[in-house]
Length: 283
Ligand code: PRT
Ligand code: ZN
Image (cartoon, rainbow, N blue to C red; front, side, top):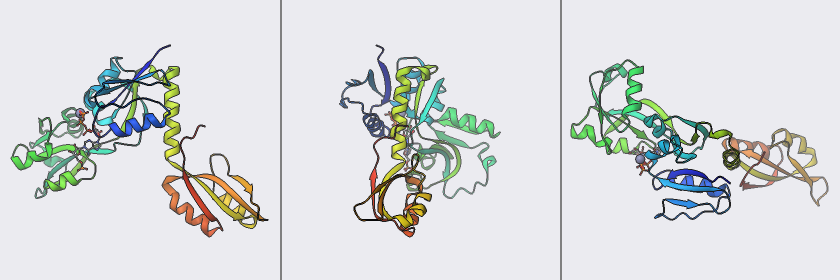
């Protein structure tokens, strides 16, 4: 039987969440910091631990069947791979930033200016699309210090909290792209049985993360009002309680409007509300 290979980041911002996702999919493997490859004992899969920059090419060239990497890295390396699933972590945006005292008004203000970045390909395309001619200075790291050192007028770098820009006296000026970790596959691999099985497992973990399992008690008189608030996976389960005319309602609630929903339920007569995390949702 074929063994799949999935490439994930060896260490860095995406490593922990990638390992956690695969473990939550029920995959059993050792995560030794020293090893470059780790076999999964209960699924025909090997995990390759790599620098994130190498992952898109490894997948494109078929050395790995799948990979988990930031969209920013995929776009910068310009590889041909299939996007199989957005993963919801490693979120950030690639932004152009200028010194706080720069009174630049619009993109045209970047004409003739120098911009330091580790993303020359993405930045180059963005400037071209907007008809701007700037001098792109490609550097390999610590981009945020270049304006202070007089190396560039502006920078183009990843931002998540914005703290790094702030502490270097810079302000975000334009959004170039937003990014998150994605599952990628070799072109055509998305139809293979093992790949499909893994995608389904990943989707069931992601769905579970977006929802909470809720159990609440309600008097039968209020049951219709409560069920109207609860679409559930299909419809809520209603279980009679020992106390006459009282029932327990079991359902799932989307995380994003969780608190609104809970207060609506309380107003509609829900009592003893218990909320639990969900491990997987298999449709
Ligand atoms: O060693 P390896 O080459 O594998 O890792 P790396 O050092 O190249 O990448 P790493 O681990 O820093 O980031 C991996 C991926 O995480 C990136 O490719 C992005 O897809 C994603 N990601 C999410 C980020 C950030 N958020 C982020 N904030 N990558 C980098 N940053 C950096 C940014 O470059 C800047 O220096 O964090 C700083 C800004 O952060 P804030 O919070 O101060 O705005
Ligand atoms: Zn890297």
